[in-house]
Length: 91
Image (cartoon, rainbow, N blue to C red; front, side, top):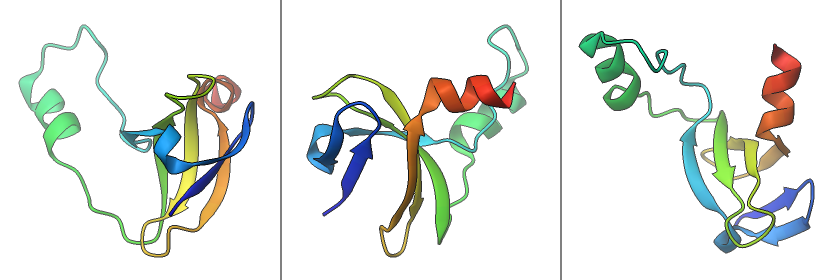
């Protein structure tokens, strides 16, 4: 069982959250009409083993999107942060 520490609600069971996908994928611009770029971004993915960045949505809590660093083998959680704050800081 996973326990995620939401920055707003505190530690919660993973059943309150929905997995939102790989946070390391760079999606093409919304107006990009290149089929191959969209095909690669949507359908061609790695299946990482070890530390990995993921999006999780706190559906039954604050409804915040979170960026979680998790080990895909052991399910150890290394960090949890609000995705919008992490991505605003990266710009």
